[in-house]
Length: 417
Image 1 (cartoon, rainbow, N blue to C red):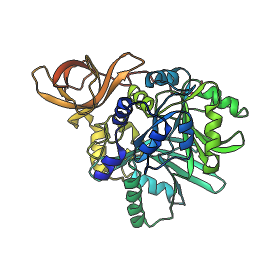
Image 2 (cartoon, rainbow, N blue to C red):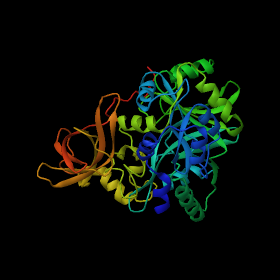
Image 3 (cartoon, rainbow, N blue to C red):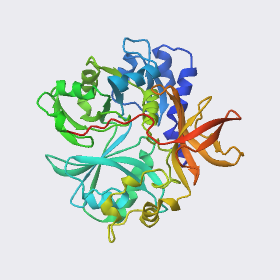
Image 4 (spheres, helix red, strand yellow):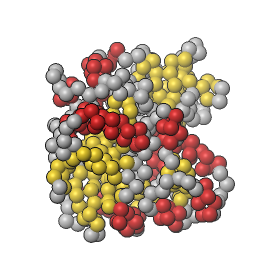
């Protein structure tokens, strides 16, 4: 657990540290990332003016400075919401599950209804503990290539070491025909996000009909001669794509995408604000092993077939399914907050006017789109209802806040007409 807390880090903390640091030339940035892991396009980040910080033991750009495509975090958020931003997410870990029992195994460690997924589709899921907590949130996709059908999974960088150890232990007891292929530092993984992302890909892949590709669908396609696995998904609330490529194409693909006129490189700072505006969780902050899916507002990730009598069990299924069936039995729930005054960030108490503590803030920032403070956190029932007036403690002072529904900024996930 200590290793996880150290490695997962906080994007907000990284952003804060980077913004407090004096301006530095590339050699200083390189010194500050000594000993950290690097994605295959580390040098591209430096060329683009990347302000590199430690995130999940990787040297990652929090924002870009001193180049023609440099933007403040606020400007980068606006760019993603209006045009297209390109994020390097290669620090996250990809897994390919193969074998005739691959579906059974993945369903034995997650809440996903993999059996019921249509070929070429995917969704957010959860890896759970026997006590109903969340080990990690994860994307799972059913797909196939020349070797046959397989399950493609992406796990968080900070959680990957414990996730992989967990999977190895489960595999040792499973006994079926399933093989875990880990793709991590040997491939590129990029998130192209924003309303003009589809225009960019349509230009680069003119023979594919993106109008028929719904959010959650994945396809193999060639981008300027590079074989890529493209999923219409993302972590910003915008339409967009995550693109997997082989290691030998990692630099060329990044250069190709970022070379398009609509696209600017985007860093961790913008990514964290965008996901918070979209009401999405950051593991280790908004969800963890002490959080159940229902408490986190993630009951929808539990596939309907996994809830049926006689369905294949998953870790913590007895506890989780009872909560899914009766959400009111869960004593605290994840909510959105609109605080006044200074932003209410992680760890701030949520109280009633009487001073009684009824919850904690888990994430908070100023929304560049709404131009107001936004936070999320957990509040005890019955104070979790939208519109409830509460207070948040910021720098020792109580400030008014209102419980609100999420997302804060409407999501724009694409559905074909």
